[in-house]
Amino acid sequence: MRFYEPTLMVGRIIPNHSEYPNIGFLQAYSLSIGRFNYKPESTWASFYNYPLTGIQLSFSQLGNRKELGNEYRIVPFIELNTRNRLHNTFLFRGSLGASYTTKYYNEMSNPNNKMLGSAFNWAFMVSVYYNLKVSKQGILRLGGGYLHSSNGHI
Image (cartoon, rainbow, N blue to C red; front, side, top):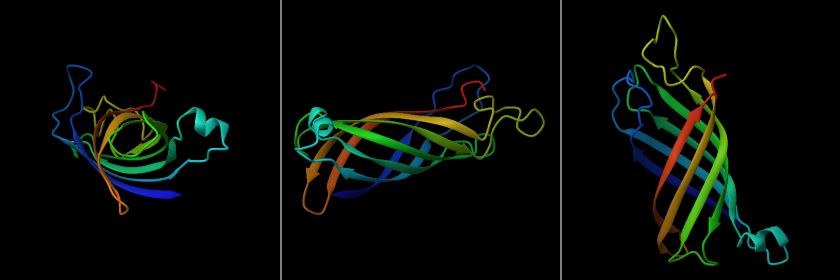
């Protein structure tokens, strides 16, 4: 069974050096497309308590369009459930994929962005969710997470 999950995220970028450009709030919008892996005959699915798997597409405004630009991400994910149900439970999501950033370091045109040195980067995300409401039409959830993009100093 497939699911579609629109998400709105807000947060802050944590500066990693003293010369970091001025930043505002990060805003991200994403769409996750996935499936419930409830197959009792599947050994791996039952071992991991029937995880959700899929792919997340997202767009982020990084809080300073002039120097940091925007980011586009595509990350496959796995979401592990602490119980074998959808309500009153915590879920943990992990993902690793790729991102594209519209502004990156350039000595002449963008010298203040020492955050990213290339347009294409690795994208990592880990988050925890709690399902507040579950109905036949959908699930309302609240959560928090950590997102990171890096080219690994390549």
